[in-house]
Image 1: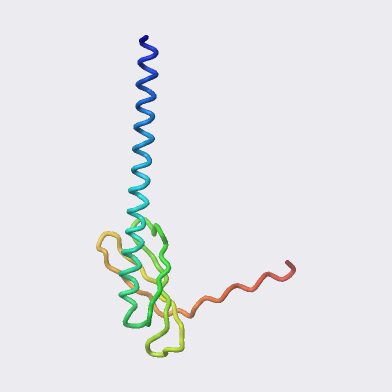
Image 2: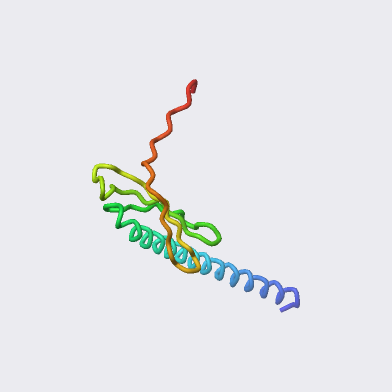
Length: 115
């Protein structure tokens, strides 16, 4: 085999190894992000449980550099027919959460006139 042939074979092997490593890293990263979102959801729904019945969380799948975020919605325990949402911030470093005040549920925006 020529020197050029050996180099081409080595380059092909390195390319294949990098491709496999990238695929494994992506799968690991996807699993890590899913685990992170599940942790935010669990902590945020637990933290709002004293205020909301059957809290449901919509989690920002990645959060910011330092925080995970979710909007948690449910019915108020103090007024069971009233629905409210709360913003939850999860500190990635300390794994603690803080909850904002009660917000009315969002209503769909009305379509713009003239469209």
